[in-house]
Amino acid sequence: MTGSAPLSIVAVHGVGNSFGAGVDGELLEDLRGRRAAVWAKEIAKGLGVGPDRLDLDFAYYADRLAAGRPVAQGDDDELLDDPLARRMLEEWARELGVADEVSQGHAAIPVRALSSWVARKFDLAEGPLRIFIRLLFREVATYLRADDAPERLAAREEVAARIAAHRPRVVIAHSLGSVVAYEALHAHPELRPELFLTLGSPLAMPRAVFDRLVPRPQYRGTRPPGATRWVNIADPGDPVAVPPGLSGYFEGIALDHTSVVGFHFDLHNAVNYLRSATTAATLAPYTGG
Image (cartoon, rainbow, N blue to C red; front, side):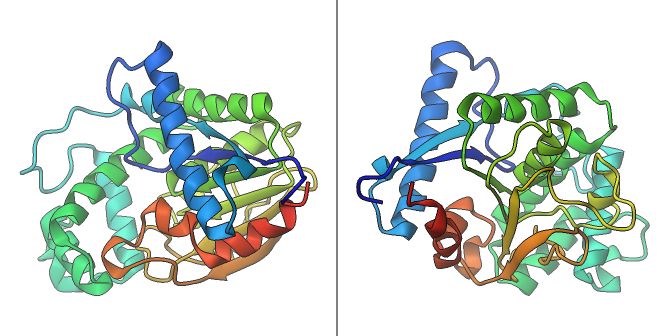
């Protein structure tokens, strides 16, 4: 990349990235800048270049979802407090192939029993996983509750606005961020990055996510408009990227990598994806200016 312009990127975060209530103004921009620096550092590490060779902006939408989340009922909330989040969790559990005994004969699957089963299957720490499961499905349910939910529109438009302002060559979206970015690029066909890179994406999760997307898939979903190249990377041990491959559900995916990127105890972490050799190989052709 010596002598070339820095690679312009807009990063779209996943779940669990809220800066907290009431964060705005200079503090919000400071925190956004700090998160952008972390992403740039990890991507640069994988590419073997300095972070200054990346011009990365961080699209932050978590605060747009906060108003639409039901108030949590505490750590003993075994079945989640939101009916839609419960239904999504149960669809996810079925997709993972949760054993019948986990449901204990009940219609709803207890979070504690499910997290224990998933922890064993994917070699994860059960305590943090239980917290993550609640957070994941509360945020996913908030975003996908209705096509015209104000929280969904606000999050989508925030991401679109950052892309429009930064005009990046590459959009990198992790986890739930891949869903928000996918919809933002479809809602704004004038935003045409050269590369759309999705990491640990749940876009193909049947019923819980795939069947709720806008635009609604007609048998199969479509890639973003224009000449944007879509590459997906999913660790086969990432319990959020279910199913890990997207090409069976979406048309126009150039490459659909199923690659081990992280440690068994921390598989869905964005950092593991950002610094991976597969991500570096995907971005390398765009680093020459």
